[in-house]
Image 1 (spheres, one colour):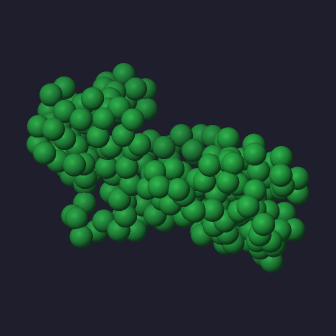
Image 2: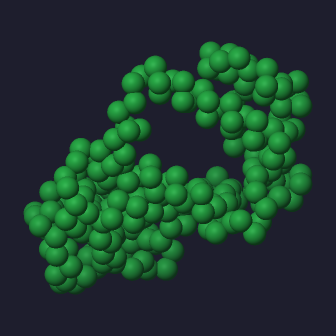
Length: 224
């Protein structure tokens, strides 16, 4: 097992507040410029508000001048342009390695494209999260949620891989469900994989997690 450390990426996670603000501003400038050159949605939005990204002076100026983006705007572009990404896709399609979507509870799901670089970023960010709750290489994380159809689920799974943790998928979904119904749970828990680690963690939905906690008192950490 690797040496125990408090941070996954200590150099970044311990940045001084002033340096962190400087870095946020640098990244924001890069993002505004990138969107202005590559995103049809933001090209239109900047033009409508007569905003040039290069004119933004600092974070306070950004907060005051850059308008909010709401989901109805993305939906309108998607329907008007027949663009499944709502004008947000900024890379050639041959760079897309994964597609994720929203749940579609208020209409058609919103699609988002993920590149290899996105996966690396997502893995880095959620690996830090796993480290913050005590996960380390050599630990086993039972996975009770289904798949990677949404961005958060994909990020969590990628974070496990990046952090060097063992993933144990102990449940499969019934059609249309994220996990098996709770009344089916006991017969699926007749497995020993949950105890393969001296300190297993858990990645499940809230209701599922509470039920598991009743049945598996040896679980010390839970992410819900």
